[in-house]
Length: 269
Image 1 (tube, rainbow, N blue to C red):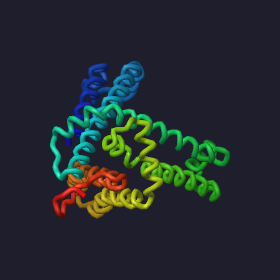
Image 2: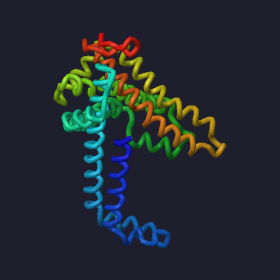
Image 3: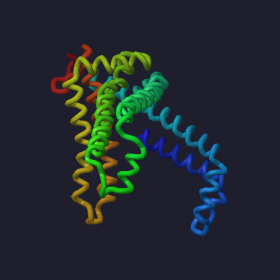
Image 4: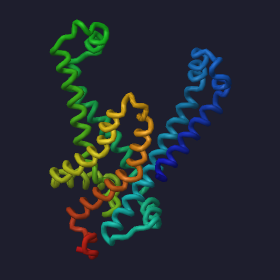
């Protein structure tokens, strides 16, 4: 909740900053032609770009702090059956920069993998071919369509594998007090040694997240889409996010020989 609130406040600050940069474009916006708004954005492009980059960095820092804090609370809860906000602040302060570094490194890893996979399809799929699909859908080459589908599926598959390989990077860093690079290595090693367990838990967490979207389709056309979407967002923040944090931390701790609190019997084993 604190993460969502903090990032939301940062977004409001970003909007206010952009508004202050070119107030003339937003005053009586209904009377301002779209061309003038776009011209105002072009004239203040560098300033707006700086604001966006600064917002992105601060949002990553805030998320890293609260992710580290939540993982610290999950570590304590799994080890002793008890946790507190003090655990959150302590873990957040200690591991914030490390998880922030992991976030940047993860973005680089994702980008590089997407580029490598895309490079394999470049000899077979050109921009001209893709544009021809959009311009003449009735004359689509089935072979080209198959290549595009294979390209998209390959990117989705590599992104899924990376997400599973980095699934326990936060617990690895917080539980074992590792550096960013060591945490990534530990997470990848953990994935190799526990592929089935990681895949199963990843499937459960993704399934929980997708369940609300699938059920929400039943409300289409009933006027309740917005209400269900809001309820799903609240449920994700209040239930799914903390629950999955505890699950991933407990999985990492159990497979790396850490002492765990037995909730059914109330002792550490």
